[in-house]
Image (cartoon, rainbow, N blue to C red):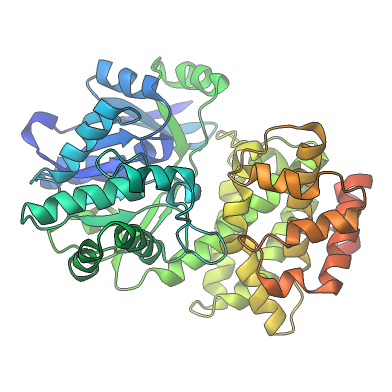
Length: 484
């Protein structure tokens, strides 16, 4: 194993914390924290991190605190080559899952040094309707925050309360930078925060609209959840024996709309693309990378595969992904030349084949109801309007439906915020057509054009049956040319 070590060149005590991050998971530590580490080491400045978890994993915060918030990121180029980065850019780690922690986090958000707030709380953490993007104000957690605005549990409530306190103290607002996989994520979070604020105080909503910047961003790095086997492998490869270590692929990308009224780090010198409009980049990534991942998540296990790399050893699946990306996604990405998309497709295939990551398909399958609209469904609508076929997308939808139906039948954990409603909708139904219709009827997920398309219902019913009754290879061969 060829290992390169990159030791930290910063002293956290020399930098104030200018960025508060909400969502202290593996992705944040392997992505945003690495960029901040590089920037602080070369440029200095008061841009150190305060990173907080607002729900689970108090143990991770305790482990980071015990290590003085120092941790390592292992970037695997392959199973034979890796780079180990020491990260010291995090000045403080917080657990905000209780009252004391929430108040400590709000205190950091209102601190005069805080100029930027970044977030990775996953799509479901914003309580937005996957189909319409509207804030689900009737959700119990948001109702709690409306009733107890000084002690919010959600990222939306936290942003609203800290911005309210900054406004009342006549302080300039921080910039809100969403780093989750949602199209137009800055605008979506802005709409959510403003909608929540309107329910509390219309003057606060107006102040947010006038003064707070919500640039959109696109993030890209494959960071699997760490398993016990991963910790053992990292220890074997690098000698690092720490519960805070995280592994990821070598590739990393961050594209950000350049709208930071209170200033920002000089990210552009360290690989971050600062642009006027991120929408084309985020659409390409969501539909090609994330869309492919979801196809693998719902179809790969049918053939017995547990990880992305295992699935990519199957030539038929590789050909299927190429067909999806170049025949069904590329026509919807009109901002890019065909050669650019072809090169991106080939790069993704090679990244998926990285057998050192062990990226679990079950991890990707979670929260499917939140992911399908931006990864597949908008593309389906565009292709349908252009009288083009979308067989790969429809097979993916059938795969998701089969997954939901099987989990409901065995009462397994779907790991989806709509699990209870989805299970109730198909409970007691024995006919596959009825189950497909019931799932398509979820207006928070599927557009009405799909739920009222009887030909689509018939195709999906047929595919759900095929995926349940025959090997995946036969299904792929019946729809697409087999690999040569």
